[in-house]
Amino acid sequence: MREFKNDLLKHFDFEEDSGFYDYFPKTQSNGKSYGKKMRTEHKQLMKDLDKILARLKKIRDIRKPELKSMEVDILHLITEISKHENSEMGVIDSLYH
Image (cartoon, rainbow, N blue to C red):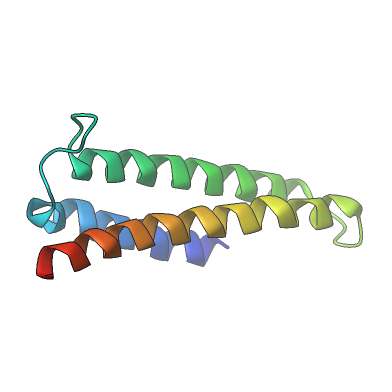
C-alpha cells in the first residue's frame, strides 16, 4: 500500500506541478477553478489513504476481523480515485470534441 501511495502522490504531483490544469476550464458553475477542485480532491484522497495505512499498521494478526472490515474503506477509496480520474478524462475529452 505504501508503494501505491507513492505512485499516487507522484501522479498527483505531476498533474499539479506540470501545468496540466492550465488546459482545463478556468471556472465551473460554482465559480471554482477546475484545477483548484482537483487539488482539493487530491488532498482528500491522500488523507483517506493515510487513514487506511494508519489502521493497517495497527493490525498485528491478519486473521482478525479488523482487516476484513477495512475492505469497504479500501474499495470506497478506489471508487473515489476512479471517479476523480474519470472526471479529469471527461474534461479532457470535452476539450477535443
